[in-house]
Image (cartoon, rainbow, N blue to C red; front, side, top):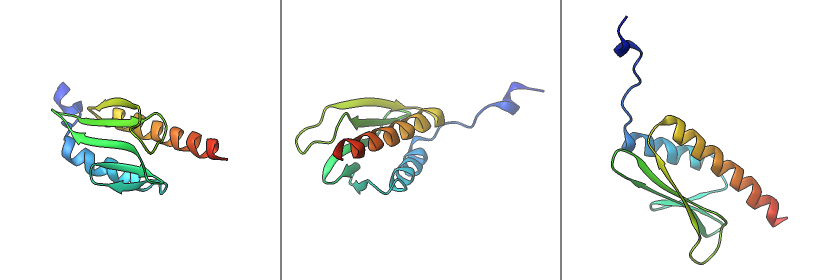
Length: 99
């Protein structure tokens, strides 16, 4: 058998961005705004299409001012899953800190 039979399909950032936004909306705690997401009025996620990847920024903590960002280059499905898991962890931590 040829290796092409088992090759992964090419990564399509535009399609992946749509699915990523859907996954983030499903978290219910976030509100979608233009090119990112907010948590209670504070920008916590910024997304943009890059060169063959999704450029994502995730706030270290939600603030009303300019947050400190962690940057991610999402170039495949595993990267997107890891990013979504990290968003879930931070949301859990942020809601726990509020209590």
